[in-house]
Amino acid sequence: MSVAVALKMVSKRFLLRHQRPYTLQEFVIRIATGKRGSTEELWALKEVDFEVREGETFGIVGPNGAGKSTILKLMVRIIEPTLGQVVVNGRISPLLEVGAGFHPDLTGRENTYLNAALFGLSRRETEVRFDEIVQFSELSDFIDVPLKHYSAGMYMRLGFAVAVNVDPAILLIDEVLAVGDEAFQRKCVAKIEEFQREGHTIIYVSHALSTVAEMCHRALWLDQGRVRAIGSADQVVEEYLESVN
Image 1 (cartoon, rainbow, N blue to C red):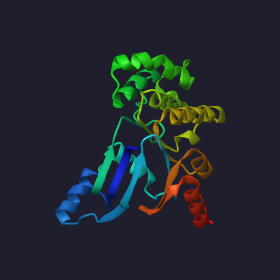
Image 2: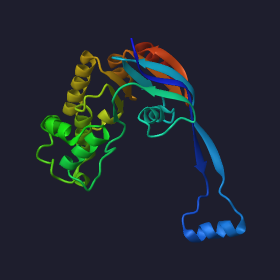
Image 3: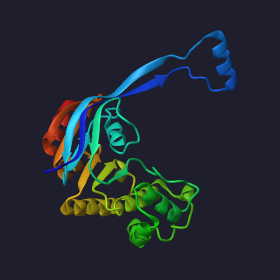
Image 4: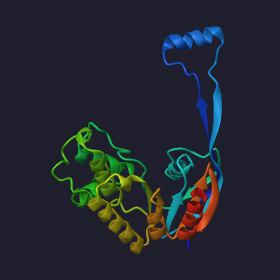
């Protein structure tokens, strides 16, 4: 089976700058006095190495700050690794956070075209899919309303509807399903199950461990930027829960 996504000994470093000047006056004073703000290194990921196979549903679990979202941002090239290599084969459709890729002053209709363009669709391709996107989102009454008037749940509905209708080879989901109401969450899960049957690759980050164990084939347990365990989803979730307890 071919590899859809691979992280090869990936490490990611962020530089945290302390005592940063907020005004031009503060900046000039620091230059004149020779004072510099201190810088601290934060390694969000350390030698992370794993592969996700085509058609696999792969879960990522771990506590807050473990580096889960950093991995997803590396996969979609929002950030680049400090060390190592990230390989992605196929069109990737990310749902990383509510409202990501949307502009609050644009309408739902305008944001649909904008978001689809970010996924690589032409205007014509989006026009073909538009009615299906709106129907899935259940936002037909609000599609010409600016997004700044949308609730978080409405943001998620539109974002998910666009992401699953751009024919992605790989779908990334980062906890956003927790925002919607119960009925729409079930609708999203049903769509994910349809994607699984069609052989799409899905990478799912969530604190809902029972959902990860039930929905994913394999899972990765990440802790303080390092891989603690990788294997069958139910086994990894069990090990993680034992550690937490």
